[in-house]
Length: 111
Length: 111
Image (cartoon, rainbow over all chains, first blue to last red; front, side, top):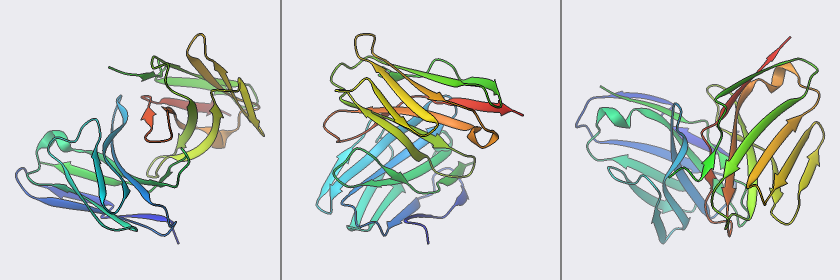
């Protein structure tokens, strides 16, 4: 079984809808991250969490919120989706080292 | 402000030859650098890393070189194999808190 899982893998939604992307991990890591990937822009950090009580904004947090429900779970929400949030979204985890372990990604399309 | 830059969006190399992927950074505080490899429909996977106290790190066919004075790192793959065809991201961090990624280079190995 995969160490980092993301649900759903693909989602199409309409402008203005609320949507939640979920991430679960079995690696036992305290640190979790949400990124988005856009063509030509690489991976950009949305939010990150170093433990259940710790939430930090990344470089592009506007329009997003997160919830760290447990050590193993980190959810990303789009309160009112807009078309420029169409992207690939990745969850990642790490322990105290720099190396991060990524999930398979969620392809989100906002129409 | 792009702190980590990969100026070549794509690179094609013949099988068996050397692939050289380049990355430049602007933040002199970065103290650890990583390379990730990404196949379509999968999350990025860690490939190799280097600390700022070293100038070279080798792992099998993969070698990363760091030139701190030039703020430049490169990934060498020798010999290149068809399975190496992927998108490669360089990333940098200081204090192991969060990674800043480059925009990626798509490597195509020609049989």
